[in-house]
Structures are given as C-alpha cells and as structure tokens.
Image (cartoon, rainbow, N blue to C red):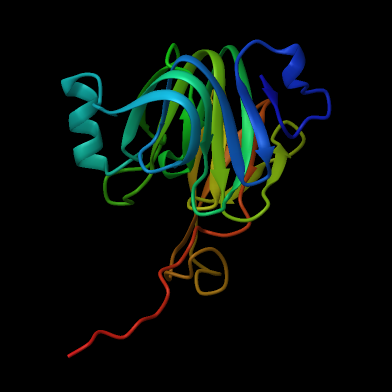
Length: 224
C-alpha cells in the first residue's frame, strides 16, 4: 500500500487518475467512472453525469441503516477533470495493490469503482458502545480520504498503539483492532464521557489519526 504520506509516492509513476490539486482538494482525471461522497463536487471541466449510488445490495443497505456508518455516495461518469473536497479538510491518497484499507466512513471522499467495500464492526465492540463500525475497501486502485486537521501516520509495529475512536481516520485492515477502556482517567482523556474508550491496534501496519475528533457544530440561536 502506498500513501501520500510517503515521499516515494509519485502519482506519475502509478496507474490511476487521482492527484492532490492541493492539500484541500482532489483532482480526478476522469475517463470512465469514480465513486465519491455526495456533495463533494466543487467544480468540473468536461462532460459528466452524477447519479446517486445505492448500497449495492440488501446486506450493505441494512448495515448502513442499522449502524449509521458511512457517507452517501454518488457515481460520476464521463470525461474531463473533476474536483472534489469536503469542508476544506486535508486530503490524503492511498493506492491499494490487492490490499484492504479500513476507513471511518465519514472520512471517505472518493475511490475507484473496481474496489469493493463493506461495513464491518470493530472487534470487541458490542452494540452498546455505538459508532464502532467502519468501512473496509479492498482491491487495487485509488482511495482518497479526508482528515479534520493535519493527521499523523503511526507505525503500529513499533509499539502498542491506541487512538480515540473518533480521531482514527483509517488503518491497515490486517491489524488486530480492539477496544480499550480507561475508567480512572475517564474525565481527562478522550471524549471525557466518564469512561474513556480508545481503539487498540496491534501488528505490522499503520493507523492515520486526525488532529481532532471531527468538526463541531457551531453554536447558534434559534429565532422566536
């Protein structure tokens, strides 16, 4: 798996058509199709059609309904240049080579249509914990993800690694992932819910952690 975090990632030397226009915007050289987050198109040049993309089967539809995981997708067809972004978040590219990447569905921006995806539950996370479902993408092709704030790429092979469940953006799918709960420092770390909960990662690979737990809704006043 090659990532835009690594200096040896040269899009000109890789198959595909995903290019970082800048740190906040993805440029897709479209000659066919791409799957992207609904509403992420900011501009395009050429001829393109935009269609709602269903879940691709009853099983995945039910998983999305029950878990709330993932963002709605659209299928873009045509030829030209497509520019994608989401709330000016940082964008990072991964090129999978017959590999799998697990992504927090809310951080998924776009991916090649030949890749397959499914929703899976984090090991050891019962329904009572809530929200610990993620999207696994498999195959060969490009994946673009977003991060709220500049993230850090952690090498999980060096030592035990833990991350806030809302801050973990994506990770190598071969990792052993579990749930770690910290009661003693519950009011001091993580989301401060009284029982701090983190994801634990073990094995050779990486986890990408964003600089926050995601954007917050600004305070506002309701009119009478």
